[in-house]
Amino acid sequence: MMAPCFADANLMAVEPGLVFWTIVTFVVLVLLLAKVAWRPILRLVEEREKTIHGSLEAAKRDRSEAQGLLDEHRRLVGEARKEAAEAMKKALADAETARLELVARSRKEAEELLLHARRQLDEDKAKAQAELKGVVVELAIEVATKILGDQLQDQGRQRELLERYVVELPQRQKVSA
Image (cartoon, rainbow, N blue to C red; front, side, top):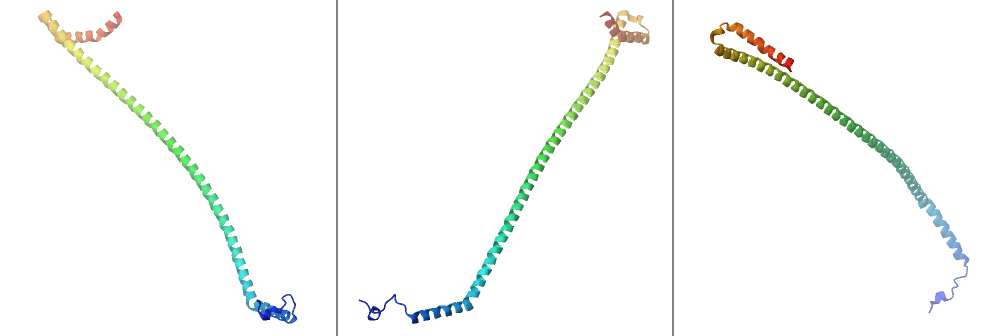
């Protein structure tokens, strides 16, 4: 059951006193809010809007700066790669030049050693031939002395004749060949 005080009330009926007081309360509340709360709320909203706007601008600047730094980084990496490639080419060219110089120096030293060896060989050959000629002359004199006995009294003259004969012997062999 319904309460006795609400039973007679018609909820759809308009009561002028209630409307008046509702309007007065609404107007007072709006004026009070406008004076006390509305301005600080608007000020906070404007400050928040400015902060958001500033943050967006800073983000745009930061993004632009980051893009610039990224482009600069890419450019520097490209230059570093080029420099590294050039340094590698130069190092390879220097190594090749050094190798060629070393090969040339080695060939020159080998040729000098070969020339020195040939000269030494020629000198040793000439010494051996001179010694051999001297020994041949001595042997020839001894043999001739033994064969002929005392007939070879002038050994100096005989030595001279034999030495001349030993020197002429290779030329005679060339002519007969």
